[in-house]
Length: 422
Image 1: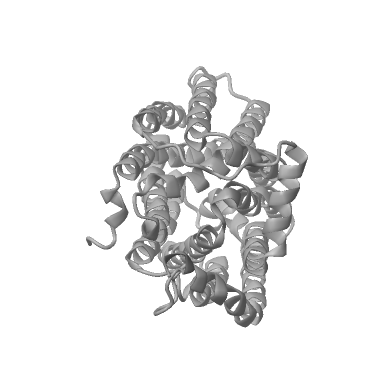
Image 2: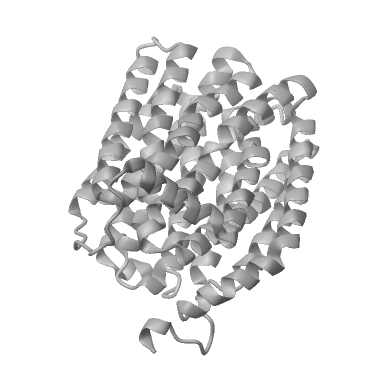
């Protein structure tokens, strides 16, 4: 247990972890309430996909540029501002729903605003982690604990939301999310990070962007991980946006059923996150990525035609576990091999691949599901997942070849010290 939570020994990370945990529960409550509200108002799986599209497409467009700002300016201040803006967005949605003024176009507009804020928040959030820990060796543990708290909230938030929606409606979920942002804002204001001497960046914004783009995509390991992540986000992860329709139409359930499904997904993810936190080295993560993607494909395929809630819960538990094993592994590898001066820009492409391609996948999956149904859409997603695993497996040997000198230089390989310490 001490090894799992070792990065909490860092004061800044401990404060961040606590505030973020409270806020994320509210965020997951809002996610579930938003999906259920849209489907209740429209009964359209296509609009579920459209809302997912509008909330994330700004990330695809803006994150490569916001990543430049992340490397140029104070990441902590950027994230503090984005949290205040998130609170205002949630407050607007709360007022519209509680006073029965909400219409679908309101939700679409607020989703676009959410996506714009996320485009600036995500690179700052991802690259801030290493600034919050006292020992750089704890980076993998801190990233895994981020996944743990994210998915712990995924476990708690949807369960609360399902009960709250059934009892008093969606509005209370949006209100609680608004209030939860106070916790993370207060936490961020208490964090003190010493100024670091960083290499100067090109004065020209375009040149700085070009420098980050070339660094990211000329590196075989970084390029492979970004492409793999982008494909999963485009063709695989959008099955989550269809869960409200899956709960209602396939399993013949209500908002409580949706809460159970999301909680099962979160429980599996939380289990995986604690496993990743217990790991002491970045070595072996390539194999974990390959195996977890294979298992994810199988679990989505099984969920497609289960028809029984207990089978679906098992499939989603396994799916959540394999998702976080792959995501946390890719995140850790990217942050380990990226240079400090390039981390913000590399993680902006990570955010673009993870959240930016998802809207296209959400829109596509919503359109496909409206034509062929939820089960066959899940089946196609599972098949694509298995094909992506095969592609990654074929590139795994080359990936290890390129990573070896990087790990040797950083002193990660056993018996090979960091060259700066020789």
